[in-house]
Length: 124
Image (cartoon, rainbow, N blue to C red; front, side):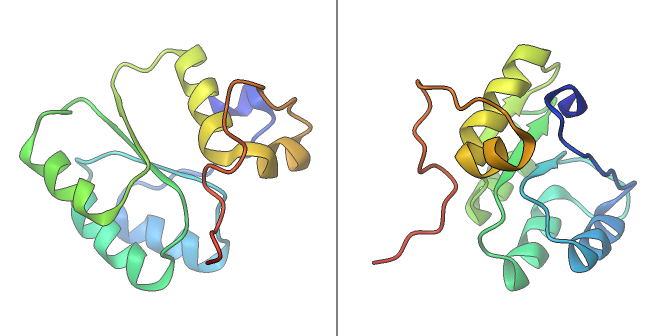
């Protein structure tokens, strides 16, 4: 779905594989399902946040009201999308979360209605 925006997507069959992918190449955005083989979404996020605290994570789940979703929210995902996700909703989310960083890299025109500082590291 994100490929139509010009994004390069990688997928993993479970949490351990996803963590290995992040170790090799830090992504601009992670789309995370809560239920996956070998590791739950909250377990993945807990591990991820130990080494990569600023990677934007969006939970995409069929269980938005579930206990695992509530647990995962403690580890700082930016958004929660309920399955099924429409292509337009996914595009809007990518623009919102990745902001102008992906727009520059992927030649996506920034959406004027989306705050351009979302997902950026903040300095205080």
